[in-house]
Length: 533
Image (tube, rainbow, N blue to C red; front, top):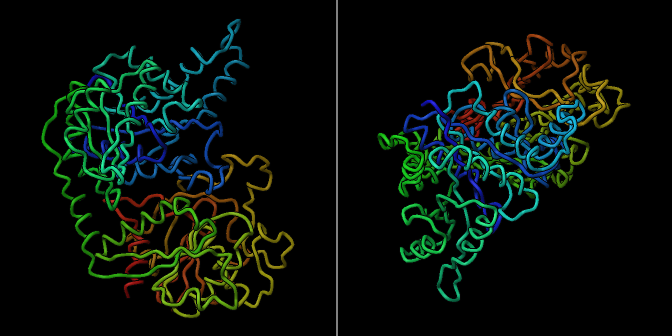
């Protein structure tokens, strides 16, 4: 295919309708038809990236292999497509403006008044095209964050209008996702919000090519006809997106609605064979017909918003399906765990996962959780700060290092078993300055981790400033909490395992970022197996 084709996904009526899931589902179907596809997200906020955002604001911050802190939708893209994303797959208004202002300061626009049109829109178009430079993608799907009508997303919508005009109708199409609310009082599905949303889009100069209607109840054919007529869209290009029990059903639903076929027809591309989705359907079948059931405690401090741990909860689904096991996750706030109630809070769990995070809030609850799991032979999985809490607990209660801590929590601790990384000591800025992205790890052969991965060298993604303090390496190893994974360049400890325990593994990296439907992460798979017991 000589030229790249572009599909833009916009949203209307309300946010959080699932533009990311629709984008990922379409990409999955096109991928299974033999096309090379990538997805990118345009985020309208002025933060340069979500790395400095509180998880309560924006959910989880997802990290790519090349070390970009990005929107959580990129996690969906990777989980659906089984292909890594990069810095180029997430663009924010902050990055756009930063780039334009840097060019202005360098004198690139000498003599010109720098304006939203053309300078900001040109930069947006450059970023949209950048994702496919050097890669032979047939189709680039671009999801535009926010809702049509938002002031902050206007420059993105204008850029799409320009691209549609520049590239032509067969190279650039727009899918608009809206809500059709059902009113139980009248027993009707109401199309007026969709009509208003499309009108809003038309006022920006964009006629959507396909409408995807989110709905709680199946839509009558008359409803689709009405929407098609009033919104100037072909009848077969009005797609129903019915609420489903799991996001992983959406590709199958979109296949039955022929979304991929309509997209290919509008782009003038061969439709080819229908995607069999064999592995995908197998995954769904196991997910819906489990033979086992386990209850896992996820101990963290952002548990009120499950999106804060999106990749972890999805990894439980992947590894649960692999093991034909229903994983019931109990979200437990680490601030609620005390010495008096820890046994009560954690009893009846088949395993505990201590989640990543930053700062001192809720840290003692995480440390108590690690102690409970260690003493009661309960399968334990510690990720990033979760591993560090297990190290602090072991130092205090087994190595008798009273007051042992991380210097992040107590910079005056007598036993800094977790300390700031050497290269972080001169860092002042917060954004994008952590140890980020993929790093190598060499695993000892006689370990649970080697049993999981089946190889000695792995690459995993990181997001941290603090690390295990090498000064205490021998103390831990001699007493049975063994560093079994080491970074070959820096000698940083990456994996810790407790000898003689059913399954007790702490990792400095984030395995949840690389778990996908087709390839569940091996550590999650083994953790769930240990929970099944």
